[in-house]
Image (cartoon, rainbow, N blue to C red; front, side, top):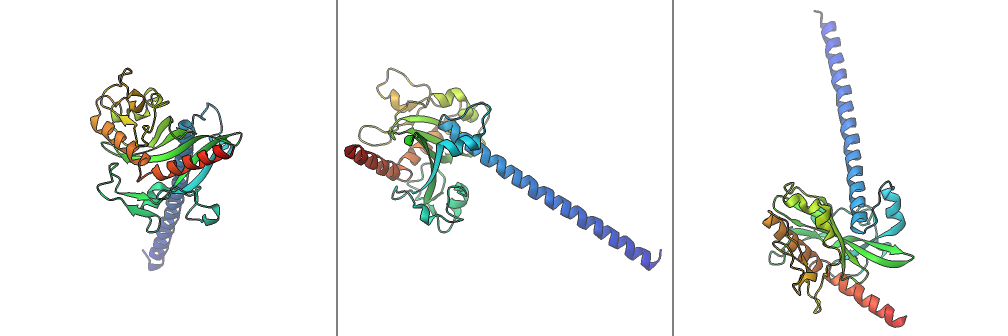
Length: 269
C-alpha cells in the first residue's frame, strides 16, 4: 500500500471519528437539556400538587404562571428580597437549591447541633411560592429537603394563609425503598397531612411524624401524622426535616414576619 493511500485512509478515519464525536456530543447536550426541562416540569407539577392546583389534562406551566407567584426570601431575616436585587444568579426562575447551598456567596454550613435534617449545607435565601386567588393569598408553598434512610428527599410543604394549617405535602426527588420509605409518594399518606396544625399555641413547631398510627382521641392528634409502616428511619427523617424547615433555622423567621405583616394589615383594615 502506497504512502498516499495510507494517508487517505488515516484522513478518512479521523474524519469519521470527528463526525461521530460531534454527533455523540450533540445528542448528549440535547438529551441533557430535555432531562433538565422534564425535571423543571416535574418540579412545577409538584408545586401545584402541594397547592391543590393540579388537575388532569391541564398545561402545568400555564396554571403555575396564572395562580402562583414566585418570591425570594432571606431565611435569616424572613424578609422578601426586592426584585431590584434579582440577578441572573439570584432569581426564582433560575433558583436551584443544590447549587445555591454549595454557592460561596449564597450558601452556608449548618452548625451540627442545629442540623437535625442532616443536610450539612443550605441556601441563605430560598425561593417560595404563593398561591393567590383574586389577589388574596390562599397558600404558601415552601421547599423542604432532608435525609431519609437511603437518600435526600426534596419536596414542598404547603401552609394555608394563616401560616398554621398544613394544606399539603409532596416530594419530587428521593431514593427511598419502594413500598417502605417510598410510600412518601402514596396519595393516601400525603392526604392525611391536610388540616394538621404546624405550630402549637406557644409558637413552637408542633407537627410530628410519629411511629405508627395517630390516635384520633389523643389531644395532640391535630399535630400528628402517621409514620411510614416498616420504615422507622425514613419516618424519623421526615419528622426531623419538617421540624427543621418550620423552625428558626428554616422558615421560622419568615413565618413570624409574614404573620406580623398580616396582623398589621388586619388592624388597618
